[in-house]
Length: 234
Ligand code: FES
Image (cartoon, rainbow, N blue to C red; front, side, top):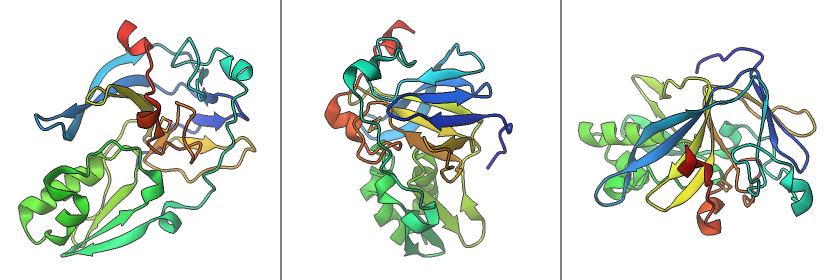
């Protein structure tokens, strides 16, 4: 994992936005799908101009998305953080395959669906004595934005993608919804009481306001039909 500049930080505020400081780059990305509608990769579609400090909407109702316009006050947004502070190691369970170990923290799933191809990642793991299956398993685990999956290989150790410290606004064109904030490259995240969450290479933060695992995304933006119209103006 990269070490981002010390000053980069995301602070969750009580029933309010994410306060981002330290000049964290803000970009737009979308999920690439194949002809079958399966998620196969990422495409960066633009950058959003942002100052050294900015506030990102967390309730899903701002008219100035992705930024906060204080609508959370009018909406009476309940942003209670329900995720807890367990580490990834505490939240995840291991799945053994030939020469590999997959770790899965289901609670962190952002429903980006990279793990669905070729019968699904859990099944691929069991077939990792086949080099093609192993390559696909590595790809699926590392494309996962939320860090739900971490793949460890007996010979090469833990597979983690090299991610530039930044926040990416996820779009999911196949489902016609906007997704979470993809926090990349080990940026520090602090709760509303000033307590750190575990710093990880990749996590997804809810920006639709509907997650039951706040501040992290739990995929509820799909059933909520969340849309960020600013993507159409970009
Ligand atoms: S953005 Fe995914 S649950 Fe809110």
